[in-house]
Amino acid sequence: MRLSAIFFTFGLLCLMLAVAMVIPMLTALGEGNNAIALSFAGTAVLAAFIGGGFALSLSGAQRTSGVREAVALMVLAWAGLPLFAMLPAYVAGWPGDLMSAYFEAVSALTTTGASQYQADSGLPPSLILWRSILHWMGGFGGLVIAVAVLTGVAPTALPVQTISIPHLEREALLARLVPVAQILAPIYLILTIVVVAALTIGGTAPFDALCLTLSAVATGGVSAQGATLSNYGSGWLELVVLVTLMIGAISFATHRLALPLRPHFYLRDIEAVWLMGLITVAIVLVWLFAGNAETWPAAFTVVALVTTSGFHHANAIGELPPALVLTLVLIGGSIVSTAGGIKIMRIILLLKQSAREVRRIARPHGIARDTVYGRQVNPQLLEPVWIYFIALATAVTFLTVMLTLSLPNFEWAAGAAIAAISNTGPALHVAFPEAPGYGAFSDSALAALCAGMILGRIEILALPILLTGSFWRF
Image (cartoon, rainbow, N blue to C red):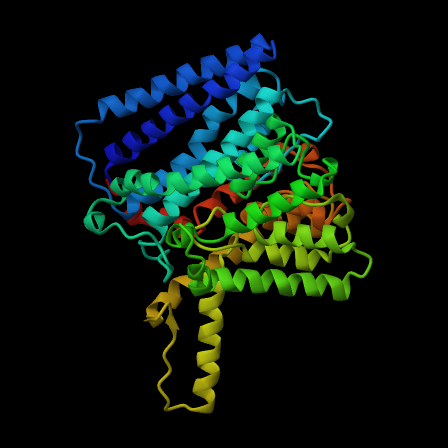
């Protein structure tokens, strides 16, 4: 393993985080909160010093990278960057202990949206903006990793529409990050600007519109008024957020193909078609089995859950069957999207294999071939998918056991574990309104949730790679 490639890239990420801290620092100065502004300034200097040190000292080193380096960087980025991201809030006393501050930073950066804060917690605007910025950066980082690493590396590779970079196919994995980011950044920025403008035109306060957009584009689950959007009392706002969440859960590779004005590419994207079908089926199930739920709040919350955002409507809390809520967040969105969860392509592959096995029973000597996007699916590709489900079941079971040590209810523990791994923190209280808030969780429970959120972002399959002895050979 070449540590130079890992820490050089991590240093660049620290520098980006330091630059991003300038925005909330200026916001704190504008609101007259010099203590928080100073905490942002000090943390930015620290992150820039450490990140710049890594980048400068390793700039001339050989940085050849492969699977091991890519996996190590993913774990280091999702677990290490929150150590810097948490410092401004921790130094300012929001919240008061290290574990809670780290939990908030991990939740924001992984776009999970779980928070110990309530809408009436009195969180300063600069820290609200910082949480939203972390959501936005985490969503974009997840996209870049999905394209540059996860869709091209076994055992995480899947037959999806992705962004081809022919001249980099033989390059080191980490060398793909910058060109992929350059391709995705315009789409991500345009979507952000359009949503901010739409919310502002609809009457949302500019600050609220910005924070809400940064989280919604990344399919996060926080805003200046919390995850319950009914606090705003605006149907237009909810409609804009709903459309934004659906866009975020569809493959950005498809967005790139569809722009400008080529919407037929969405019909060719099997994941996008299945996503729309899943939303439709879920809404019908809610209508059939949750008769007490109001139509629009339930429909909005269903879309939010399918896209793993965590936004919800107050009138839908406790009205949706817990099993449906947790199933929706587990499935998730498309592979090359900001959504979490298992991802639709894995579900499609498993269903195709199941259908093929049924055909084999009826016609044992028949030849069965499955195709995705006009290409035949290699049967060996299904092995990692099954490994993924085994790893997922193991992780959920382990987290549930860890959480039962702190929570009195097994259902709450299982719900919290699934919410963390699917990166949909508010789903716990949508399914179980009586469950305690994250602020009541013990430090050990928060640590378990942090591990679950990070596992969700690294697609879980990176964990078996980390546990192999050959991974740690230098």
